[in-house]
Amino acid sequence: MKIGVIGGAGVRTVIFINGLLKRYKKLNIDTVVLYDISREKLEVIAKLCNHVVAREGKDLVVRYVTDPVEAIRGMDYIVTTLRVGGDHSRVIDETVALKNGVIGQETTGVGGFSMAVRTIPVLMDYCRMIDQYAPNAWVFNFTNPSGLVTQALHAAGFHRVIGICDAPSSMKYRMAQKLGVTEEELYVEFFGLNHLSWIRSVQVRGEEILPKLIADDDFLSSIQELEIFDRDVIRDTGMLPNEYLYYYYHRERALANIEKSDATRGQTIERVNQLMMKELGEMDIDADPEGALQVFLYYMQLRENSYMSIESGSANRPMLEKGSLPVPEGMGYAGVMLDCIEGMQSAAGRTLVLSVLNNGSLPFLRDDDVVEVTCNVSERGIEPVKQASVPEMCELYIRLIKRYERLTVEAVRDNCAQKAVEALMMHPLVNSWSLAKKLMADYAEAYGQALVGGAK
Image (tube, rainbow, N blue to C red):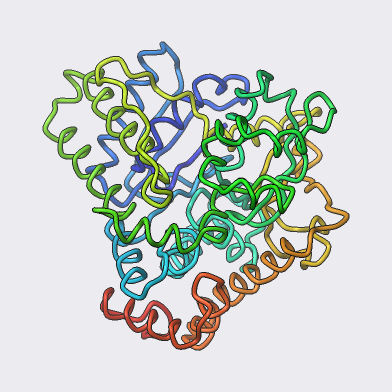
């Protein structure tokens, strides 16, 4: 079997390949084909990937191509991991938002809207190619904002698409470590939308322990995703929040922390990536592949250890010295995808959190709405866990954000500025018609053309 990666020059590709090495035989995968519009970056990332394969003595074939059709034709699985506009577009998205006094995070609110409307048309084109050259392939969408983009693809009739996010799986991993159990022994039930979800059940070998965890200050302080929240909001709701709920529960705090920071998250990532590619570009990777890999891992550590630190006002996590850094084993986006493939190939299956069609999981949404929920994945298919009831607060948030997502998809489909403004107005982090119009005007000025409603 073969995997095609559209956006293969992304920095996480190396970690994806390393994670795949542990399971490629079991998953019957023999080839990975990387494609990206940036040939220079693609060549660097491909060399690092092939070194990771060689140092482990494996026979997985990793190659890169400059024609997207070659990364699609005949593939069994396709990964979409794009950043339309490059790293600097994230800087623009955040800067325009902050100028207007709102959060510009790339998946939530204004930043997510801007990224989505730039990205959806490009992914539509790739999905049309997939329909033509690999109609039976499963598409794993890593492109942010994952849930919204996946909603747009399903609405356009591309139904072999699964939205992937590593936030739920990473949180479960850390919870298992803290509790001293394996991930297989731990059942964590999520419900909601991508970056707007809650945990309503945590079980160890069938025993419900969520109330104990919520009451345990040590536990809440020890989990990276939970330590940023006030304890009262967790205990009042009686559920554990997805870390991105920080932007809703503590909006003014997040905004103030970003405004007083020396750089936004987008500026930080842009600078780290530029320094990484500059240093790698000055090396002879063929002559010193391990040295190049260590440079790559150092900058990836710098990137990951500062995650959510600006918004939460917390300190960066400690850094390890360059020279003997291990390659992460694929936990994250890649791990979720590989778990999903493994589940789809087995009778026993796996329990995973995915963005998929609702199909009755959340009773107040339409069946064709994309939700992010715990799913049972096996050779029988993907079955979302059904929620008999949902707390009113959660339902209202989910309804509101899903309305925003639908309007955003319609705005892109119809190239309609009015729907775009209405979509932004609906989002709780904007919540104003006049502000939505101002944001649209400022983005048009920043990008030199209207995000939606301009000439095509």
